[in-house]
Amino acid sequence: MVYKKVEKIAEEISAIGIGCWNMGGDWDSSEENTSIRIIHAAIDLGINFFDVAPVYGWGVSETVLGKALKEGGLRNKVLIASKGGLLWDEKHQTRNNLSKDSLLKEIDDTLTRLQTDHVDIYQMHWPDPNVPLEETAEALNIMKKAGKIRYVGLSNFSQADVEKMMEYISVDCQQGLYNMLERNPGSYHGISLEYRTEKEVFPNVKKYGQAFLPYSPLFQGLLAGRFLDGLTISARDIRNENPKLTGEAFKVYQDGARKLKVFADEIGRPMNEMALNWLRQKEEVTSIIGGASSMEQLEKNLRCTEWDLTTEELGEIEKILAPFENME
Image (cartoon, rainbow, N blue to C red; front, side, top):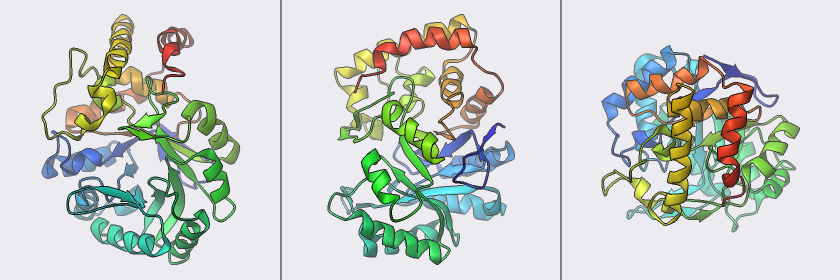
């Protein structure tokens, strides 16, 4: 396993992490026993970073991760990154809430589901324009003093808000949407993003010594070679809500993915390995939040740590990706 180190976080972090969204029942691949086996195997293979959130599966993903770590006595071998600030109702309609009282309740619920006494990295999932950053920071400071969280992260925040939050509390990592075809994206699942990853986030994580955790590294399967001939998921799969996979824009992304597949074949590498390697070789990228729905997929993802793209290969890839640099 390859590990990376940033100034703000004491531990080395595996370059490949496990994203637990697909373990919560919202994807076609969700199955608890399989998820637990994958978590155990990932740790055996050197992965020490797991990203989860209460809203993933409406609490189920945290519960599954907690159960897996408890069963194996593995809690002290991993870093758990969970999130707060995104609530839901009985109809699964979500709303942002970064208020002090709400966050202090959320962290306790998260710790209960995870069966642990602390979360290593606690990330604010989305900005909340109705709550002052100072109030959110107050809640986070209370959690830190109580030993319930160790590091603070911000996910999907503008860089202006990141720097404002840093006036009240240390911001140790950032999480954002980033992959070969979404380099400076302006939206995710139809939600506007107030940051541009390469243009704005990258310079700041280097400047401040923060970790950067890219989510959706394989574009929800497109960069793993799925959907090259069309979208093939069931009606219950949450990826149906991504307009980039279902709307007119899909044709553009699909064309880019097809060109990348051709190049991957030319260099004799699987497409998913090439896509993950491209991310891993970015200096600013700390741990790639990748999903794994099977042991085979986990092993395939990890193979990207066994080889590097050459300078020449990176140059050819850049020619394919150039049209996507400013595509929002």
